[in-house]
Image (tube, rainbow, N blue to C red; front, side, top):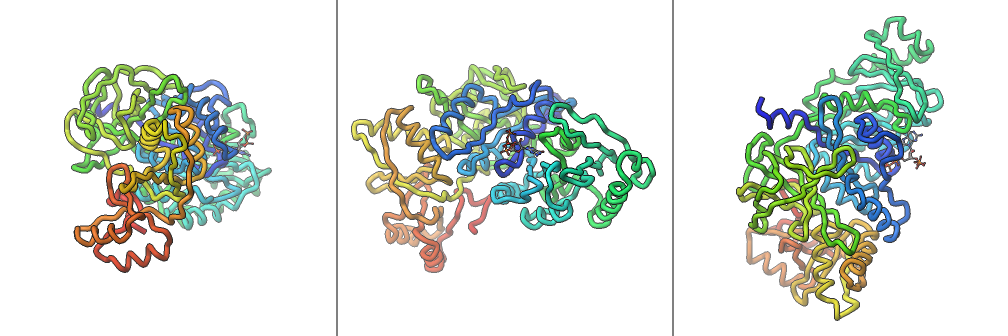
Length: 533
Ligand code: G4P
């Protein structure tokens, strides 16, 4: 096998996603413990923001900034190199999570067995479905009195819109939780509620009908497990990895992250079945990871919060070929050659300079303002990776300059912050008015704080009562121009100069969709991956 194929086969690049509090941070930490990347529990900083105040957010960012390694955590596990990409827990940063999902090949979704499917889980899953990302579900907190496992599976199917297939099965739950039976490895794992040790009580029970099972659990639990497994085998098709890889079926595991329980089975199965780096679409063609020419794209930009160092780190996913240090690559949007003296990788929580990186890897590139989200690097070919859409924001506000002497700083600051993906910027060309769109209120505070502290500019935001941003295209130039003229101040352009209509209400939007059949109204900036809904 060629070296590149060997390197590709080794890699698993994924993200853990969940509704806040379901256990994402805890699970991440246990994975790192298994991978030997950290030695003690408590080493992974929780990126949870409990209070919605910019100062809290900035404090967390500052702490995280010291160790940007928390954005990507690479570790070795059984001959594999695992790249685990961190996603923000706060709902207001959902768009950041969506973008991170463009850089992974699969996802582990954590569900709280007490709360079941929660609002943010549904939205995250929508993005996975849209991209056909393979998903493994981990039902967490089995040590708490939760819902019945079969009911939970039904809820998962119904609310997440995906077929599920249990690969492990809980023996009771809550106070009487006894362990899980792995339907994949035919092993019984006994629960020992201990937060400090990794449970080693693994018993191989090939046939759960054998009396062997009764030696380990009570008659009642053994009987229940036998009945449950029989039901599972009757209801669900035999396990087949293909529908999972196609994004049509999600295997389900049960456990308790905080007690290190049920995780190793999942991790072992994960490295077995999860996809290695997959091909990716560009505007001109599909790029296969095995191609010898290097390609990659930027999916996240992490600002340096320290005002003395204005540099940022752009996170790039390698899509094909080999990335090399100190080698010129083509920044396709700017058509500019760039080379990187200190590209960083994040193995075992340490940031270190890398000489080369392979498909599936994430490399941190020091940047002084050349990059924005979605930018593509190649060895010369002109292309742009697809699938990093902007979604319609939910809150819109106009940016108002509070210090006319600092308008240049404000201009530069807002451009750079929106390049990082903190928020979306829409410009009303007449009068150069700037409308900022976000998913949550917190971003406005963060923008205001950062404009002041990093750029020395003062601003204010005036709320605008828009319902949605719609990207408008049409083959009928005349109609498009007519619509733009009639809509006047409700027409703006996004950062790439696409026409966007800021609809004041659902009623008016529906009316215009009816009035202008010649126009296409889209709710994301990229129409191939998501249809207007
Ligand atoms: P998140 O990143 O998804 O937001 O969740 P996180 O891991 O921070 O977990 C949220 C809370 O749930 C934490 O408690 C954590 O200890 C707890 N937790 C995680 N896994 C389990 C589990 O298997 N069983 C039970 N009973 N609890 C679990 P906390 O009180 O918010 O924080 P901490 O003080 O314990 O760190």
